[in-house]
Image (cartoon, rainbow, N blue to C red; front, side):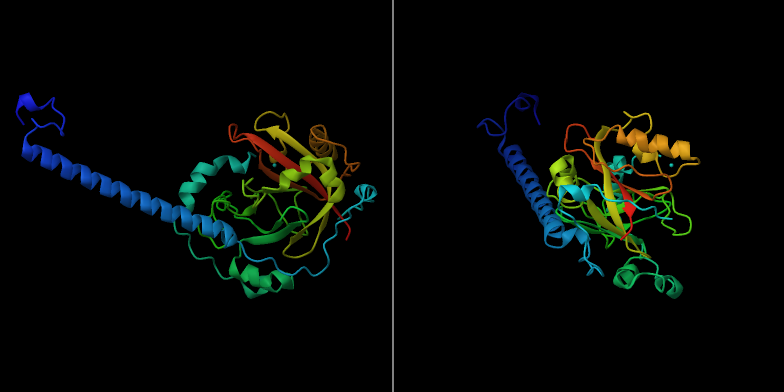
Length: 313
């Protein structure tokens, strides 16, 4: 192009006709590519929305409970008699890596061995055969939480952005930290379950209802069944915190070598409690912690957690 035309706009009458025609064709191609990309993005967003809403984010339908869910709705029921039942970083902090990894096609899950299936409770056998990563089922009345819990030792955040079916899902799946053991013969002192705080209320989106003491008084207990036994749990404490703010972070508490260490861990949590539940665990009782992100989108390091202790059914 001659130098005298370089500073002229493509729509000026002095711009060479051939150059003006080529420029317009280039603009049309660019606009066409943008329309195609925009359409594809809308289709993808629509598919993800349908998967998250209509198809429950890849989560299975809840199996029918063998026994009624225990849920006492009186203030006095929060002070129940509790009978004894014979170690990291926060896993939710790696969401971006999980988003990228979850778009890859997962390998097909191995079929569980017959002897393993035989040990599983009857209501969970079909789900376990569908996905051997299943380790339990969590139900909390009044929250909409009625979901499977998985565990993937060696790849702790595998389900951060995957549904129970293994495909990409914005809300992921509730998962048990890889350092926890549900073995009835050798369980870790504290079981830690992670879940996303979804804006639509799915996954742990309604767990933060427990910020209100009134909600706790209405729902002081919930159920978490492992594959091998059912379990009822009494809420001990609910609290807000920030990653790195605590001397003894709850997300590093899995086991304790001594009674003193166990008490220090539990007391560190009780000191953060938003209200007094009237429940204080005793050494030797099985603990369960539910962890999710805080409500603010400006600070992704905020966390909300719930500590519970197992009680006799």
